[in-house]
Image (cartoon, rainbow, N blue to C red; front, side, top):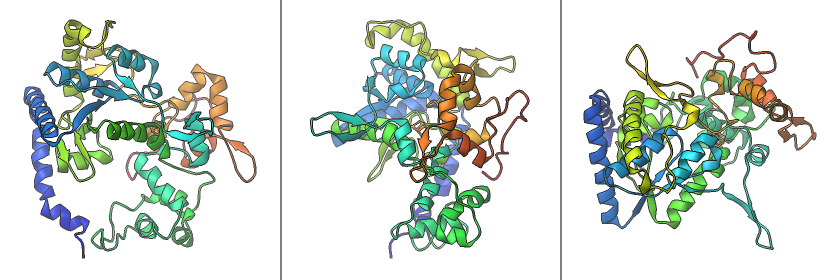
Length: 395
Ligand code: SF4
């Protein structure tokens, strides 16, 4: 019998690795900055030994800072990005830094050679809405698309029982939280038998796959290259644990990556962003012939020190693709869909009511149906709506 998840964790001494990592997360900024430089160099040297190239996968502020930081210490990989998904102010920084701009994955090639690429509305129509979180959406997607092959995973999502590979756990993290099981579990026969409901729309994490992951993976394969990523364990999410277990540099069988900022927190990142802004103002000609005033995209505002001594961005704290449903259940109103209404009422109307068509009835619907189902207000005026959506607990 092969090694199961729990045995693997014991073999690699995961608990100790997590404790060591968390101790480093508590170290002062100067330590972390030096540590990031050492890890980044080690990664580069190991790649060179293995005959691999390396690049930076660039999106928002975190990875822009990483790209500049690497250059500032003499590591000069190319940057790639599916830039058009980002805010315009971020795209402008990408252009000034000479980041290579990728397009979404190819959907089909016509007989005359015309290439058709995936667009967000088509992906949502075909596979489903990206809502709640990537991890939860992927689980619901499995429940909504049952096959013989995914039956063990579906059973684990419904019950938490993991079977042989998962070490026969009975209450594993694979189980969807109760609130989502109640609403989505009924797509699966076992879930339906337990009385769970099924949603009147499809849910999927394929949007990220076709718009972001596949284009970057394809580029990486073509260029025999592995990425530096701007991930930080302190940001939480599904990657936090794997960063803490696997550390900054990971050379696995199928995944190779470096996350030099893994032990950083938001303050460290913003401190380094200010340093990189200064560094850029002297070294800008390394990147393109156009100098920009600051490497902090306008959507974040500016980085300012607050009276409590903490650094904050004056506008967005984080950015993401526009009109994505990930995290929407935890956002206060006015939320991103309210903002869209303000900014472009016509587009909002289309997004909320007419984005997709029910393949059976031909009925048009949009994010409105999805938000209603997950309990997020959207149709009423946010000024009079009660603020806050779900409590984070239990999500
Ligand atoms: S973040 Fe959201 S909108 Fe952007 S690619 Fe991923 S699922 Fe799609």
